[in-house]
Amino acid sequence: MQPKIDLHMHTTCSDGTDSVEALVNKIVKGGFTHFSITDHATIDACFEVEKYKKELNGIKFYNGTEVSCEHGMLDDLHLLGYGFDKNAKPMLDMSEKAKSYRKQRARKMFEHLENKHNIKVPKHYQDAILDIPTVGSPHVGRVLIEMGFGDTLSEVIPKYLQGIKVTELKINLLEAINTIKTCGGIASLAHPIRIMKGFNYTHKDIDLLVGELKPLGLDGIEIYNCNQSKSDIEEFITIANKYKLIMTGGSDYHGKNKPVSLGMLSSDGTQADPNLLEEFFEKVKPAF
Image (cartoon, rainbow, N blue to C red; front, side, top):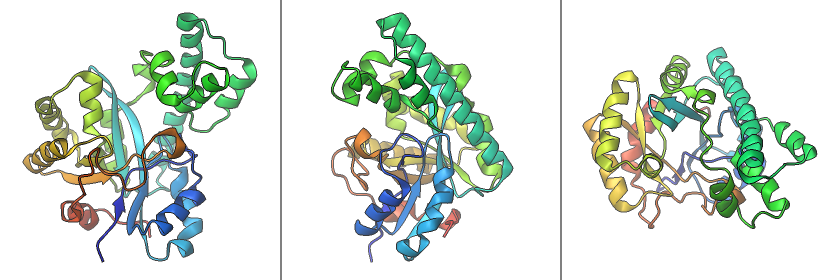
């Protein structure tokens, strides 16, 4: 049986629109063999998914999370953690710290909207958003849509929520790497193409960045992602081989919040080679 893999997806535990139960149903119906839920700043889904072990019926699940980090002059690097002990105190503590940072960033978004765009978000909306355990820009974006400032997240987020500098409200990258590894997991650099677009980097710049992060404990790099083309994938495979990194891959599925389907591991239809992900399955222990 050919493996069907997706190691990067989000639920309503963070900024996705599918509940864990709904996502599990899609995983089963979609014929997936291996998956991980990598919600932002939380590992809540790693606990909730256990309720559906019977329905998953042998499909391999890997504990996962995605951590927003800062490193030097880079204020928005995302790190994927896999295979950690979800009950380990350092993981739980980092998750709570990241959740707190996200609430503080949401408050910064409200201030930004009022100061830069003269948009005062009503208190009942602010309270509702701050009640969300792991709040993100899509939650604020949906409020802007309800208030009539646009029709889609892809319209309102770039228009109203970009340019908010909150480096002090991100987890330090080295702290995140050390926490994940201390708790038995591996740390993989998420969607390097996003780093290229966000910081005007080239593939060579990613090579240099990875060369800097490898000695700090980086274990892997996400070679397959919904925004990465065949040529990008080839470049990232070369970088992974150069630095002896574990290769990972996932769609970055967010449900209705992003026009991406489960299992979409490239931007141009390039199919993932399961053999390239074999080291991940050899070194990362599934939760079940």
